Image (cartoon, rainbow, N blue to C red; front, side):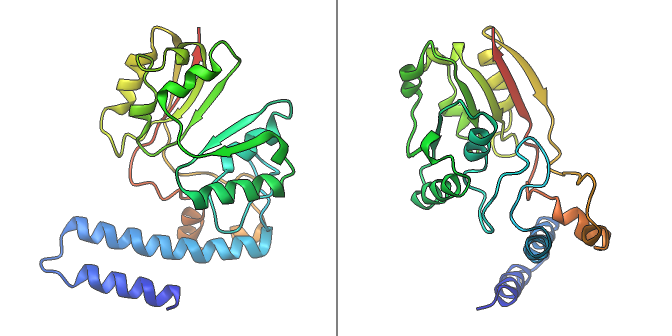
Length: 228
């Protein structure tokens, strides 16, 4: 079944219920936006290829159909003297991250594993460590200095999934405010493409917005926490 037919089937299934609610219409709009984003993604790949265009990880050669490994491999490229440990429960995500590391020639410094538990932080106590955490709300369970005292001496960059767990941002701030200097970075989920190429400028304005949309359902601020 083609992508268009899949989207049509899902949309008709969503809208067949009565009455049509605001939440239902919102979900339908989101579904159509994702469909359109995939088409725009194909246009981007055709015109720009897989090289990251801007931002702190610019220049990384990415994969056409994946998001896994972006931070791990990107940071390995950015910090050539560092070792990177990447963790993901999904075996497919592990394979993709490994492939991305190979593509960017950093396989010797990126080790991909599965589950990481709070008690595992003790293995890296008293070392120079940066924890980069984006785990869809599980940061509430993982990043607890009461369970993992070693975290008090580590720097952290954490995406706080406020859209999934209301109040998680303040919870994390409360946990680390005594041991860390904390900067809260609000994230709208919308990016701006600087020095955009002509093919991008020729897109309709709505397509330009969707091209830089991160598909977020709500607020996901970042916490940058530097150990005191």
